[in-house]
Length: 420
Image 1: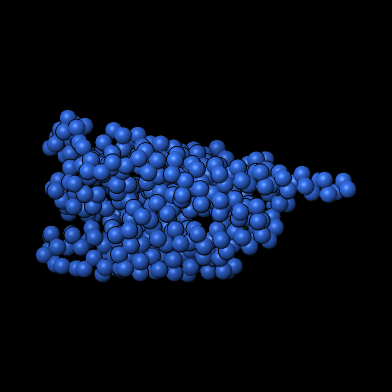
Image 2 (image 1 turned 180 degrees about the horizontal axis):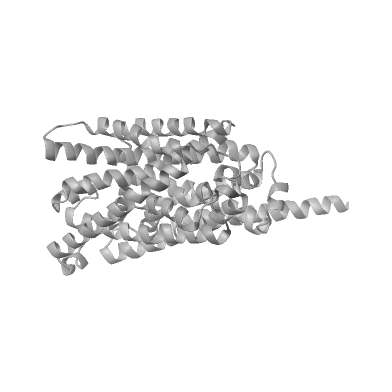
């Protein structure tokens, strides 16, 4: 069982880039990625929805790359890499809380989806009715087992789940194209009309947390290049493929409830089994990162990481029972506003102010860095309330600019004071 929580990963335990890419692919290849494609296509023609999704995932990759390379440099998770930008106590209380809530919320969404799929299997094939809340509870507990064991359990689980969901998606894609025809799909007219900024924001929201917490897994990378490659190869292709499949299934079924769409295509049983596997891999990542955030928040010993992972998943399971899936798009909107500005402040601090230098990063750690906290608040407000542009980009850029302005103004002020 993995014991590393906030301490640096030893060189002997570093992993090759493709091992980390597999973890990222496993987190992308999931039901929620299909649902993001479905959510976007409800308000956009098919081709525009795909373009919006591509832009959204590209935005994620850009800031994820910087976050991931910093994790590879320092060998520690996001709640620690953020300690220079926000201060030791600022990172502990503010960033750990935000990331814990986000990861736990995602666990609840995924457990709800898994519960719905399992209930459908039992009802369709065995005639047994199991309430979705009960299925979500049972599968939430099962998913926690691999999360508690840590990185290696994630790696092995993905060897099974990733090929299975890729196979299901290809079969579903073929079924959609042969049944409904390319022309009908191209001529699809959505019920609503989303703005480009809103649609791209949905795509970013689908993996906004993953981009920010890149260091949780890239800390196992042997170099910056490995961190960059693992994120690029693991996230973008898998995310786009699932987004397209989800959009097509939604066009055909008229709902982004993927279990209903697969049932209409005659893939109910096999589809639901594979969806459970895919959800399992992603939820393990959610519980794992949520556990790390809780360890940081309460300043716990590394050995308590498995227990905190279990608690994170348990809270997420309760949220699943309470029906968090009903608020899926609202949840994505809030994440789009609150999460990316964290990366903006961290990128400004480490890569610009500290020039990507580990020694400068360590020397810059204080208890509370009000510059980072102020820039995060401003980034969040801009992302949430600014009506023009793309909310994620608005949040990242505004928090980054705010951090740099305050940092250099304060630096000049200190220099002037010293001269006098």
